[in-house]
Length: 430
Length: 151
Image (cartoon, rainbow over all chains, first blue to last red; front, side):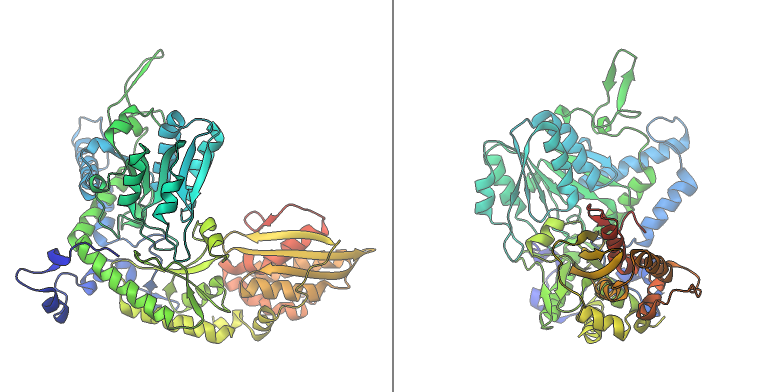
């Protein structure tokens, strides 16, 4: 995993060596854990060990309180009331947009569209950008490791306009080859849509190179960063992607809120996604004038509490320090990979060189679903199944995997418990 | 509850060494799929008169799914189609009902080991997939059966 320069982790004047010999000054996992009320419970008689963060992360107290506070103190509709509560709600809502902008390094809040989640963001691009730019015979390029939400909207578009979906293959480690990728960027390719960080494999795609190669042929790129924003430093200007989607609930925020980033030149040219309130400047029965960006794409009363919760989640991420958090998660990931490799019955699915936060695996003689039940009995929550990535499962010729996915609050002790649980399952079944 | 009440020895035995795990050409056949966990099995039945002369299955599933399919094939061989449907109903009640099963005149025999499944709602579909697939095969339905609409 490329964690960037570790310099900023170091207190002034301290070398990396000194830091590694001293207790971690910048990331106190026990302090972080104390921020998550849900972790303080027993499940089936055992302390909860939550390793299903790729499905949804747990929520820190600050996020829960921000949502409660909005409803307790400021609940009102946004963008139209002259009264005090509406103004407070609008300010908080728009501040969250600014927090999203700042987190991903976008140029302007006009480029940040609030949506229900990453899925809706992708559908929005498919049905607006896609419907106006993709014609019969054109191609959309995705990768083998996509989540269904970055496959199905493109299949629907292809069906609507008669275009074709092309797929970049992946190797046995779960990585795309840039050569193969480049060879699939053709004259008919109208868009690349790729995972930033794979939810099923943990692969971090070489997004800078992918965008550069696509742009050499004037092909825009959408990144599905549903898993990316809580585990990676994301800078859309540096990556130079044309679109990026993120999901609130996968980055310590609430469900039902996410954001679409789009370069202003694209968003300005795109037709609206849905019609309704908030997305208009004026309406007569003869003609409607659409609102300015970003409101043009936000029909209807938005998820105000969700957006405010997302803003609090971004504050939380930034208070942890994204780099420090990446370092910590990577340490737990590598520890987990080594422990799993030491079990002869276990086969890791997804061993990319650039990897983050996901331990996907199968255990010989133990079906993932049975493993999930046995671990649950020990208070350990993992995901089992196809992870909404059936083509990825097919690529590795497994019907399902077990997946332990790491967040900032997980520890090596959590991994130890997981390994003990897997061993106990192996004992039951073999 | 103790996990061993779910994973009883008989279930573990049948999941490791499923009985009647083969195909049957020119038999009634249906395919069942549980999208939640990826379990996929095919059930084949050979009917003579109204008797189940042979029944077998193939596919890949979790221990509960595989053992349920295996024990099912043993349970309904040489039964009439009507009896097979009755056993289906009785088994379904065993794994889904809140109440302990009443004496119903149908002896589920070895199938009673699945009583523990009802404590694990998310696993009920694992136990019933083979049975829904069997019913589809008996009814000569050919479409793939999915657990999403049947339980």
